[in-house]
Image (tube, rainbow, N blue to C red; front, top):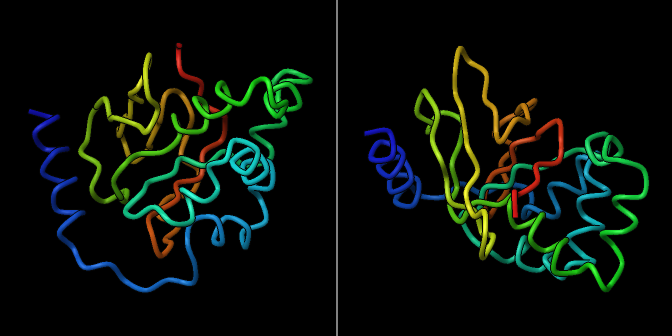
Length: 162
């Protein structure tokens, strides 16, 4: 039932006419000034273009603080060319192939497909008591609108199990 409700919400988000905003997801993230590590990682992974040009995306965006909380050396290791696929997997795990605002999230817990290919391809989104969690990360600011989707700011980097 929950997946059916989520599916209906996703369908409605595709049908709704998009509003004009200040920029695409990358431009909006750059303007916010708290996603420098995320933008650098997306560029290193070759995903910045997809986040700029893709349509109707939802990004669960970890802040610079969230990246800084990873074990020492993690970000630097992921940015090395030999770890590009691992970086792509992690970053695509933060992106949904459809635009979902906080108002469209049904109460309870739902598994939602991400853009990650292979292995762990879904995140668990929980909405309880007005609090939204994504794979254990808390949404600290929801519905940052961009021309091509929406950004939900999260307090930690979420990692696929594989």
